[in-house]
Amino acid sequence: MSALHKHDVFDAIADPTRRKMLKLLAYDELPVTMISHHFPMSRTAVSKHLRILSESKLVSMTKVGRETRYKLHPEALLELKDWLSFFEQFWDNKLSMLRHVVETTTDREE
Amino acid sequence: MSALHKHDVFDAIADPTRRKMLKLLAYDELPVTMISHHFPMSRTAVSKHLRILSESKLVSMTKVGRETRYKLHPEALLELKDWLSFFEQFWDNKLSMLRHVVETTTDREE
DNA sequence: GTTTTATGAAACCGTTTGGTTACATATTTG
DNA sequence: CAAATATGTAACCAAACGGTTTCATAAAAC
Image (tube, rainbow over all chains, first blue to last red; front, top):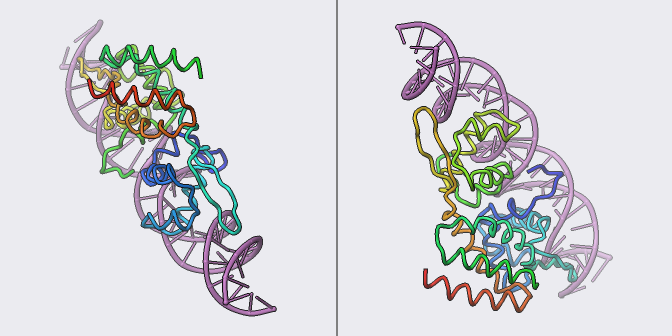
């Protein structure tokens, strides 16, 4: 994906480092330096991954003093869930087929 | 991802062309030339996308005479669904929280 | 007010990606 | 058998990716 056009959710989760970041941010809001301690790369590289996650709305940023705290914004994964749900009707499993119907019905109420 | 290591499902669906291919193959098994008619690129480029989808097990190939027919193998998307299910517990919606519990319980029976 | 800390931006670099065209091969058709 | 068809492989290319180091800036701490 181009540098001008923003990265979407599918791009964002394609990278294993970014997927790990999402799990890390699932419970805690964390500043860049803290996040970078969990990865074998420079803080700058971590910062760039966070920018991509931010572009795709998977994380949100809050400035607190000199820190920038990032936290998970899980609602952005709904796009992925919706995309997936289309294919569930093709799983050769009657139980998941049934569940597909139940889920899509439930979705209407959200 | 490297050329030696196979592409995984997350890589495979990162590209919009490949996502479109999956939808196209959802209903019909199709040979390369037929598939390429749906995309504004060369048959060779289409073939390369299909190889990546094949590496990630999202499609399967069957040789029929001089044709290679590709079809969707939706079970490969289970990995994605499982990955997603971890995050559903964080959606700030009690209903989807409840559904998460129901689904993971149901999964045990498959 | 100087120093330290936290961060992002810029420039750079090797590798991968997504496309191309040309070619080789196998199968079907006439 | 010769010609046409279906496909994959190879070589190539520009752009994007994922990393680096250096620098600028803002806020906190001393």
